[in-house]
Length: 256
Image 1 (tube, rainbow, N blue to C red):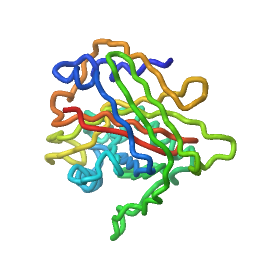
Image 2 (spheres, rainbow, N blue to C red; image 1 turned 135 degrees about the vertical axis):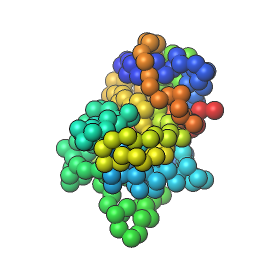
Image 3 (cartoon, helix red, strand yellow; image 1 turned 60 degrees about the vertical axis):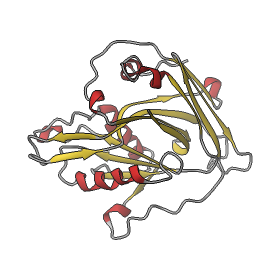
Image 4 (cartoon, rainbow, N blue to C red; image 1 turned 60 degrees about the horizontal axis):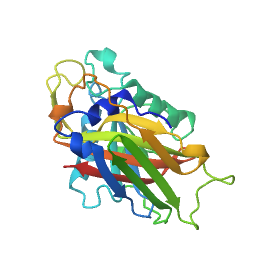
């Protein structure tokens, strides 16, 4: 049993959202969705248009069913004069992990990784997402009850999981916030007012019990100072299962 990150611990005990964060139960659909990762920074002048494109998923009827947008704020542009308040070195490491696993050819911002593969379509005239294969891969359930997190993935028997030796599963869990407005005072976006949604506030990766497809973590409350949570218009738990490092299924919902 692996404990969650201190950031998530504290969020679970932060009023007035504690009840919602402590009580969550959601079952995914069975069709493979689009997991959309944007690596961005408030210190990058090219990033606001990409963030605006990601923000538009807030009006998408299939949000949290077919589309799971995630904005990971990296830290390596902080030296330009503006420290991104949402930046986290763990998010920068995730971007480099995509490079190391050959999911991308280089590291830059803004960078989109969709379904575990680098996507440069946003930079062209046609920004339609890659066509969904409609493959039934199985269902993911996430449950948070009190201080316990449980998750399980039940694959469809006929699913093709891109592995000849049986997939190695991992569960990714993120707390995502929308409705943030930041007035940037320095750096490349100096004097700009940035409206940003789907910002990853915390992220952790869990290994399954005994190498299977079930996950269990006890949430140990700890008190830490958490900036920016109160400024979120909405929060959501987002969880996705990866098979051999690529997203397979996801589940999420807003916390009301």
